[in-house]
Length: 193
Image (cartoon, rainbow, N blue to C red; front, side, top):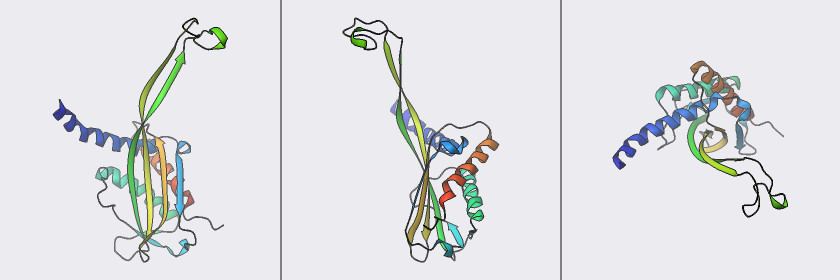
């Protein structure tokens, strides 16, 4: 039995990563987006970037990785950044994916008001009953980081978190992935205060 669970684990992880990518397949307004940056950074000096991978991080399939990067690339191009493949770039850009499970509780009552106004009664004297069930929901997070190549330091980070709810339509998935990246990168570069 234990052997079967171990062989199913990679399939589960792949399904979870695929589900995370589909995270972006729901309307962008329902994502929790956060960002942070190093105050005083002159973001106007950054004109080029190169994709790098985080050592030890497991990335999704080549196709999904390409879709995520293409959605980010299109947003960075709108912001005046040019992707390069050499070492002569101003920024290194990377992304990471993570999936967590949370317990969701659903409770309902069949009605009835017992002694003292307590729903479901007091000491078994009321009418009706209450039931609670739990289910696990998958929460996905995508993180994008920008590193100043010359200074060898992180200058901007952003993340989007959303409950996973994939669509079966690949075109819709790509469109929503692009919307999500637009929302995530809306605050890059940060506006001067």
